[in-house]
Image (cartoon, rainbow, N blue to C red; front, top):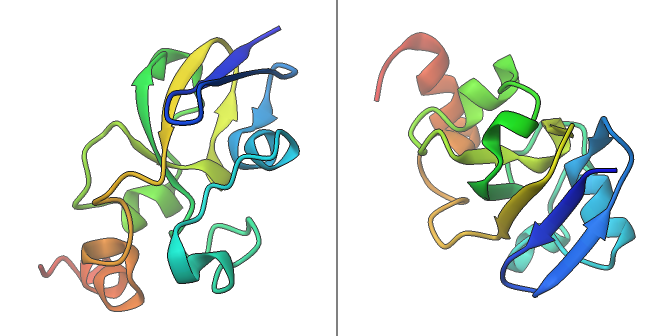
Length: 120
């Protein structure tokens, strides 16, 4: 059984293999959203880019970045993931709501469109 360690919250959560990272966080009472994104998010459909988590350990135990993540996180480090698009297949340690995870660059609608057409 994989374990997700939420660094900032000091909490560990067991999940089934293949569990969705966002859903596992919410089921454990951990909020993946920051500020107004608590109200203004897509509900886990991968359309808003606001449930960003930073992977501190265990990247190899997660599903590969999806095409949606590549667009929304184009100007973010490879360790940043959209939790709604990430499956957990082994132990992992994450940081929820990283300071520079949301609100600028490619995870805004304008930024995502620019990433699609190759402009920055």
